[in-house]
Image (tube, rainbow, N blue to C red; front, side, top):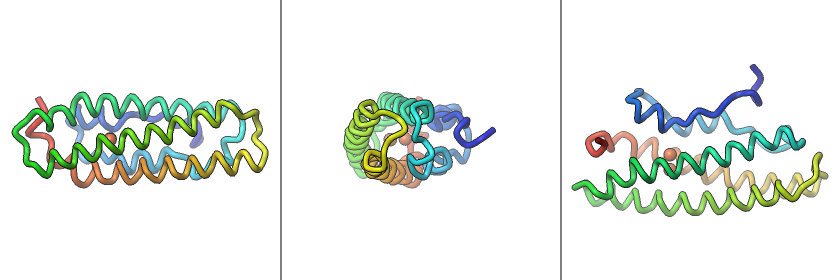
Length: 150
Ligand SMILES: [Fe+2]
Ligand SMILES: [Fe+2]
């Protein structure tokens, strides 16, 4: 199996199934291509677009399960504040994802150097933000939410 055949499996589902040691950061890091140069064809870029859709689904189900559970429970204030911050980050990441999606949908493939450069800047911004977000959830959210899930 080559890297680009790899299917993205949502780490949240595994976490909710009770699997131990799930790291969103590691999963995302190993799944995301370093840059878009190896995805400079319509077929290859569709994997990125599919992934952007998966991220949207992940955020929605995270908000409906984990975030809501903390918000409606008698949880410590600092955990509630963290969830409020993470919700805001979801919005920002989805905005970047939408910009990237829009740009890719307007391109013809293979992209020329200028378009590829532009797409890569957007991709880097999206990826950087997403990975920092996943790291924060790994370190500060997921280790503390079990008592609030039902
Ligand atoms: Fe999240
Ligand atoms: Fe997450």
